[in-house]
Image (tube, rainbow, N blue to C red):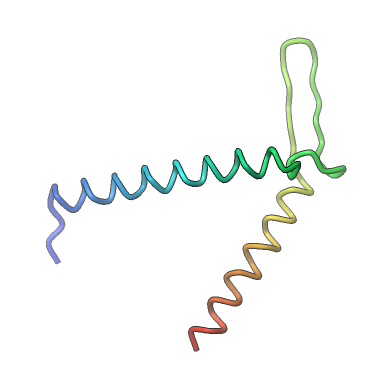
Length: 76
């Protein structure tokens, strides 16, 4: 398989579309309240803020694990 400028351009376009879709998904999920769970820690002052989305990361991990497990199960 030859990997030239055409292939690199196609991969850059695909990655850009993927990043845009993930960004839109994060915006939609953020409005639904996923990143405001009780286990998400937020510290800050007047001019700074640190945010640790611990509970949100656990939920995202469980959902992605279930999806990937189902995909692997039905591929067999």
